[in-house]
Image: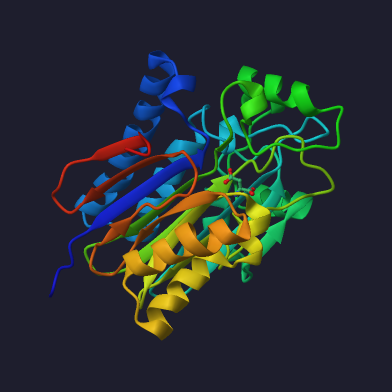
Length: 314
Ligand code: ASP
Protein backbone atom coordinates (compact mmCIF):
# COMPACT_ATOMS: atom_id res chain seq x y z
CA UNK A 1 0.00 0.00 0.00
CA UNK A 2 1.20 3.52 -0.76
CA UNK A 3 2.15 5.15 2.50
CA UNK A 4 1.70 8.88 2.76
CA UNK A 5 4.11 10.76 4.92
CA UNK A 6 2.33 11.53 8.17
CA UNK A 7 2.31 14.95 9.83
CA UNK A 8 0.76 16.98 12.61
CA UNK A 9 0.42 20.66 13.49
CA UNK A 10 -1.05 22.23 16.63
CA UNK A 11 -1.81 25.68 17.99
CA UNK A 12 -2.42 27.19 21.40
CA UNK A 13 -3.92 30.46 20.19
CA UNK A 14 -2.88 33.61 18.31
CA UNK A 15 -2.81 37.29 19.21
CA UNK A 16 -0.59 40.06 20.53
CA UNK A 17 2.07 37.67 21.71
CA UNK A 18 5.28 39.68 21.96
CA UNK A 19 8.70 38.81 23.34
CA UNK A 20 8.62 42.06 25.28
CA UNK A 21 5.52 40.89 27.18
CA UNK A 22 6.89 37.43 27.99
CA UNK A 23 9.11 36.21 30.82
CA UNK A 24 11.61 33.40 30.12
CA UNK A 25 9.81 31.20 32.68
CA UNK A 26 6.41 31.69 31.03
CA UNK A 27 7.88 31.10 27.60
CA UNK A 28 9.44 27.84 28.76
CA UNK A 29 6.09 26.71 30.17
CA UNK A 30 4.27 27.45 26.91
CA UNK A 31 6.94 25.60 24.93
CA UNK A 32 6.59 22.60 27.20
CA UNK A 33 2.80 22.62 26.80
CA UNK A 34 3.16 22.63 23.01
CA UNK A 35 5.91 20.02 23.00
CA UNK A 36 4.00 17.60 25.20
CA UNK A 37 0.95 17.88 22.94
CA UNK A 38 2.81 17.39 19.68
CA UNK A 39 4.74 14.43 21.05
CA UNK A 40 1.48 12.84 22.22
CA UNK A 41 -0.24 13.34 18.86
CA UNK A 42 2.77 12.34 16.81
CA UNK A 43 3.35 9.12 18.70
CA UNK A 44 -0.17 8.03 17.73
CA UNK A 45 0.68 8.63 14.06
CA UNK A 46 4.06 6.90 14.29
CA UNK A 47 2.48 3.80 15.73
CA UNK A 48 0.10 3.69 12.76
CA UNK A 49 -2.85 5.22 14.59
CA UNK A 50 -5.50 7.36 12.93
CA UNK A 51 -5.35 11.10 12.42
CA UNK A 52 -8.60 11.36 14.40
CA UNK A 53 -6.95 9.74 17.42
CA UNK A 54 -3.87 11.93 16.96
CA UNK A 55 -5.76 15.26 16.94
CA UNK A 56 -7.95 14.18 19.84
CA UNK A 57 -4.95 13.17 21.98
CA UNK A 58 -3.01 16.33 21.09
CA UNK A 59 -5.97 18.60 21.90
CA UNK A 60 -6.64 16.75 25.17
CA UNK A 61 -3.05 17.38 26.17
CA UNK A 62 -3.52 21.11 25.43
CA UNK A 63 -6.85 21.12 27.31
CA UNK A 64 -5.13 19.66 30.37
CA UNK A 65 -2.46 22.37 30.29
CA UNK A 66 -3.65 25.36 32.37
CA UNK A 67 -2.06 28.18 30.34
CA UNK A 68 -4.17 27.61 27.25
CA UNK A 69 -7.78 28.75 27.05
CA UNK A 70 -9.43 25.34 26.78
CA UNK A 71 -10.40 22.63 29.25
CA UNK A 72 -8.54 23.24 32.52
CA UNK A 73 -7.43 26.76 31.52
CA UNK A 74 -10.78 27.92 30.10
CA UNK A 75 -11.57 31.61 30.64
CA UNK A 76 -14.32 32.94 32.91
CA UNK A 77 -17.73 33.93 31.59
CA UNK A 78 -19.61 36.99 32.86
CA UNK A 79 -21.26 34.74 35.46
CA UNK A 80 -17.90 33.49 36.73
CA UNK A 81 -18.40 30.08 35.14
CA UNK A 82 -16.55 28.20 32.39
CA UNK A 83 -18.49 27.40 29.23
CA UNK A 84 -16.49 25.44 26.72
CA UNK A 85 -16.84 24.66 23.02
CA UNK A 86 -15.09 21.97 20.95
CA UNK A 87 -15.30 20.09 17.68
CA UNK A 88 -13.64 17.32 15.72
CA UNK A 89 -13.93 16.23 12.08
CA UNK A 90 -12.47 13.48 9.94
CA UNK A 91 -11.58 13.95 6.31
CA UNK A 92 -12.31 10.44 5.03
CA UNK A 93 -15.99 10.28 5.96
CA UNK A 94 -16.71 13.98 6.63
CA UNK A 95 -18.12 12.83 9.96
CA UNK A 96 -18.04 15.47 12.66
CA UNK A 97 -18.94 16.06 16.29
CA UNK A 98 -19.26 19.31 18.24
CA UNK A 99 -20.34 20.67 21.60
CA UNK A 100 -20.94 24.19 22.86
CA UNK A 101 -21.57 25.91 26.18
CA UNK A 102 -20.62 22.91 28.29
CA UNK A 103 -19.30 23.04 31.85
CA UNK A 104 -17.32 20.67 34.08
CA UNK A 105 -16.55 18.14 31.35
CA UNK A 106 -12.84 17.45 31.74
CA UNK A 107 -12.06 17.12 28.03
CA UNK A 108 -14.57 18.82 25.72
CA UNK A 109 -12.82 17.49 22.60
CA UNK A 110 -13.36 13.95 23.83
CA UNK A 111 -17.05 14.72 24.23
CA UNK A 112 -17.11 16.08 20.66
CA UNK A 113 -15.61 12.78 19.49
CA UNK A 114 -18.22 10.77 21.38
CA UNK A 115 -20.96 12.98 19.91
CA UNK A 116 -19.59 12.15 16.46
CA UNK A 117 -19.52 8.44 17.13
CA UNK A 118 -22.39 7.71 19.48
CA UNK A 119 -25.09 10.39 19.43
CA UNK A 120 -26.48 10.13 15.92
CA UNK A 121 -26.08 13.92 15.75
CA UNK A 122 -23.34 16.40 14.96
CA UNK A 123 -23.78 19.23 17.44
CA UNK A 124 -25.00 19.13 21.07
CA UNK A 125 -25.17 22.06 23.49
CA UNK A 126 -25.37 23.05 27.14
CA UNK A 127 -26.88 21.04 29.97
CA UNK A 128 -28.25 18.32 27.72
CA UNK A 129 -24.84 17.78 26.15
CA UNK A 130 -23.51 17.35 29.70
CA UNK A 131 -26.25 14.81 30.36
CA UNK A 132 -25.15 12.90 27.27
CA UNK A 133 -21.54 13.04 28.54
CA UNK A 134 -22.66 11.60 31.89
CA UNK A 135 -24.56 8.82 30.18
CA UNK A 136 -21.47 8.00 28.15
CA UNK A 137 -19.38 7.84 31.33
CA UNK A 138 -17.05 10.75 30.50
CA UNK A 139 -14.93 12.26 33.31
CA UNK A 140 -16.25 15.44 34.98
CA UNK A 141 -14.37 17.87 37.21
CA UNK A 142 -15.56 20.29 39.93
CA UNK A 143 -15.46 24.08 39.32
CA UNK A 144 -12.17 24.39 41.27
CA UNK A 145 -10.39 22.29 38.66
CA UNK A 146 -11.01 25.03 36.10
CA UNK A 147 -9.86 27.86 38.38
CA UNK A 148 -6.68 29.54 37.17
CA UNK A 149 -5.31 32.63 38.91
CA UNK A 150 -4.37 34.53 35.74
CA UNK A 151 -7.73 33.90 34.11
CA UNK A 152 -9.53 35.04 37.27
CA UNK A 153 -7.59 38.32 37.22
CA UNK A 154 -8.46 38.83 33.56
CA UNK A 155 -12.11 38.40 34.36
CA UNK A 156 -11.95 40.79 37.34
CA UNK A 157 -10.71 43.51 34.98
CA UNK A 158 -13.78 43.35 32.75
CA UNK A 159 -16.50 41.68 34.74
CA UNK A 160 -18.37 44.87 35.63
CA UNK A 161 -18.41 46.08 32.06
CA UNK A 162 -20.34 44.99 29.01
CA UNK A 163 -17.00 44.25 27.35
CA UNK A 164 -15.57 40.88 26.65
CA UNK A 165 -11.99 39.93 26.01
CA UNK A 166 -10.37 37.50 23.68
CA UNK A 167 -8.34 35.75 26.35
CA UNK A 168 -5.56 38.28 27.17
CA UNK A 169 -5.93 41.80 25.89
CA UNK A 170 -3.29 44.48 25.74
CA UNK A 171 -4.97 46.13 28.76
CA UNK A 172 -4.29 43.12 30.90
CA UNK A 173 -0.57 43.67 30.43
CA UNK A 174 0.02 40.33 28.82
CA UNK A 175 -0.97 41.19 25.29
CA UNK A 176 -4.07 40.23 23.35
CA UNK A 177 -4.15 36.52 22.76
CA UNK A 178 -6.74 34.12 21.50
CA UNK A 179 -5.90 31.07 23.57
CA UNK A 180 -7.99 28.45 21.84
CA UNK A 181 -6.21 25.17 21.07
CA UNK A 182 -6.34 22.93 18.03
CA UNK A 183 -4.66 20.25 15.95
CA UNK A 184 -4.64 18.91 12.40
CA UNK A 185 -3.06 15.65 11.27
CA UNK A 186 -2.42 13.36 8.33
CA UNK A 187 -2.00 9.68 9.15
CA UNK A 188 -0.03 7.01 7.30
CA UNK A 189 -3.15 5.95 5.42
CA UNK A 190 -3.69 9.37 3.88
CA UNK A 191 -6.57 10.39 6.15
CA UNK A 192 -6.90 13.92 7.50
CA UNK A 193 -8.52 15.12 10.74
CA UNK A 194 -8.96 18.38 12.65
CA UNK A 195 -9.99 19.27 16.20
CA UNK A 196 -10.39 22.56 18.09
CA UNK A 197 -11.29 23.40 21.71
CA UNK A 198 -11.82 26.67 23.62
CA UNK A 199 -13.21 28.45 26.65
CA UNK A 200 -14.24 31.25 24.26
CA UNK A 201 -13.97 34.86 25.41
CA UNK A 202 -13.44 36.22 28.92
CA UNK A 203 -16.65 37.76 30.29
CA UNK A 204 -18.76 36.36 27.45
CA UNK A 205 -22.51 36.57 28.07
CA UNK A 206 -25.84 35.31 26.83
CA UNK A 207 -24.54 31.89 25.81
CA UNK A 208 -22.12 33.39 23.28
CA UNK A 209 -20.58 30.74 21.00
CA UNK A 210 -17.55 31.34 18.76
CA UNK A 211 -16.23 29.66 15.63
CA UNK A 212 -14.50 26.78 17.44
CA UNK A 213 -17.38 24.28 17.50
CA UNK A 214 -18.81 25.36 14.14
CA UNK A 215 -17.91 22.92 11.42
CA UNK A 216 -16.69 24.92 8.45
CA UNK A 217 -15.86 28.04 10.47
CA UNK A 218 -13.26 27.06 13.09
CA UNK A 219 -12.74 23.41 12.14
CA UNK A 220 -12.91 21.42 8.91
CA UNK A 221 -11.37 18.30 7.38
CA UNK A 222 -11.77 16.75 3.95
CA UNK A 223 -9.42 14.17 2.45
CA UNK A 224 -9.80 15.86 -0.95
CA UNK A 225 -8.33 19.14 0.27
CA UNK A 226 -7.10 19.84 3.80
CA UNK A 227 -7.67 19.82 7.55
CA UNK A 228 -7.93 23.18 9.33
CA UNK A 229 -8.14 24.35 12.96
CA UNK A 230 -8.58 28.08 13.62
CA UNK A 231 -7.99 30.55 16.44
CA UNK A 232 -8.95 34.18 16.50
CA UNK A 233 -11.87 36.56 16.82
CA UNK A 234 -14.64 34.03 16.42
CA UNK A 235 -17.32 36.44 15.23
CA UNK A 236 -15.23 37.18 12.12
CA UNK A 237 -14.19 33.58 11.57
CA UNK A 238 -17.85 32.52 11.62
CA UNK A 239 -18.90 35.16 9.11
CA UNK A 240 -15.95 34.40 6.83
CA UNK A 241 -16.54 30.62 7.14
CA UNK A 242 -12.76 30.43 7.27
CA UNK A 243 -11.96 26.70 7.42
CA UNK A 244 -14.38 25.70 4.66
CA UNK A 245 -13.38 28.68 2.55
CA UNK A 246 -9.81 27.39 2.43
CA UNK A 247 -11.02 23.92 1.49
CA UNK A 248 -13.25 25.38 -1.24
CA UNK A 249 -10.46 27.46 -2.72
CA UNK A 250 -8.43 24.27 -3.04
CA UNK A 251 -11.27 22.11 -4.35
CA UNK A 252 -12.95 24.51 -6.77
CA UNK A 253 -10.17 26.91 -7.66
CA UNK A 254 -7.26 24.50 -7.63
CA UNK A 255 -5.22 26.58 -5.19
CA UNK A 256 -2.42 24.98 -3.20
CA UNK A 257 -2.72 24.83 0.59
CA UNK A 258 -0.29 27.71 0.93
CA UNK A 259 -2.06 29.89 -1.64
CA UNK A 260 -5.47 29.30 -0.05
CA UNK A 261 -4.20 29.89 3.52
CA UNK A 262 -2.31 33.04 2.63
CA UNK A 263 -5.24 34.47 0.71
CA UNK A 264 -7.79 33.83 3.46
CA UNK A 265 -5.70 34.70 6.53
CA UNK A 266 -3.42 37.42 5.22
CA UNK A 267 -5.69 39.13 2.71
CA UNK A 268 -9.42 38.40 3.11
CA UNK A 269 -9.49 38.27 6.92
CA UNK A 270 -7.26 41.32 7.27
CA UNK A 271 -9.57 43.39 5.04
CA UNK A 272 -12.55 42.03 6.96
CA UNK A 273 -11.00 42.90 10.35
CA UNK A 274 -10.69 39.31 11.57
CA UNK A 275 -7.59 38.84 13.69
CA UNK A 276 -6.18 35.35 14.24
CA UNK A 277 -4.61 32.38 12.54
CA UNK A 278 -4.87 28.66 11.88
CA UNK A 279 -3.00 25.42 11.36
CA UNK A 280 -3.51 23.43 8.17
CA UNK A 281 -2.32 20.23 6.52
CA UNK A 282 -3.04 18.71 3.10
CA UNK A 283 -3.20 15.07 1.94
CA UNK A 284 0.48 15.02 0.92
CA UNK A 285 1.70 16.38 4.22
CA UNK A 286 2.23 20.06 3.43
CA UNK A 287 1.75 22.09 6.59
CA UNK A 288 0.84 25.78 6.84
CA UNK A 289 0.54 27.86 10.03
CA UNK A 290 -0.52 31.36 8.89
CA UNK A 291 -1.61 34.16 11.24
CA UNK A 292 -2.24 37.88 10.91
CA UNK A 293 -1.60 38.81 14.54
CA UNK A 294 1.78 39.31 16.23
CA UNK A 295 2.21 35.70 17.25
CA UNK A 296 0.67 32.27 17.49
CA UNK A 297 1.62 29.43 19.82
CA UNK A 298 2.33 26.62 17.38
CA UNK A 299 4.22 23.41 16.79
CA UNK A 300 4.46 20.93 13.96
CA UNK A 301 6.22 17.80 12.76
CA UNK A 302 6.36 16.44 9.23
CA UNK A 303 7.07 12.74 8.70
CA UNK A 304 10.47 11.90 10.12
CA UNK A 305 11.45 15.56 10.48
CA UNK A 306 12.08 17.19 13.82
CA UNK A 307 9.56 18.88 16.08
CA UNK A 308 9.34 22.62 15.46
CA UNK A 309 7.91 24.93 18.13
CA UNK A 310 7.36 28.67 17.58
CA UNK A 311 5.58 31.50 19.31
CA UNK A 312 6.47 34.76 17.58
CA UNK A 313 6.49 35.89 13.97
CA UNK A 314 10.18 34.98 13.34
N1 ASP B 1 -11.94 31.59 18.28
C1 ASP B 1 -12.27 31.56 19.68
C2 ASP B 1 -13.64 32.13 19.91
O1 ASP B 1 -13.98 33.12 19.29
C3 ASP B 1 -11.33 32.33 20.52
C4 ASP B 1 -9.90 31.96 20.37
O2 ASP B 1 -9.45 31.57 19.29
O3 ASP B 1 -9.19 32.06 21.38
O4 ASP B 1 -14.33 31.62 20.76
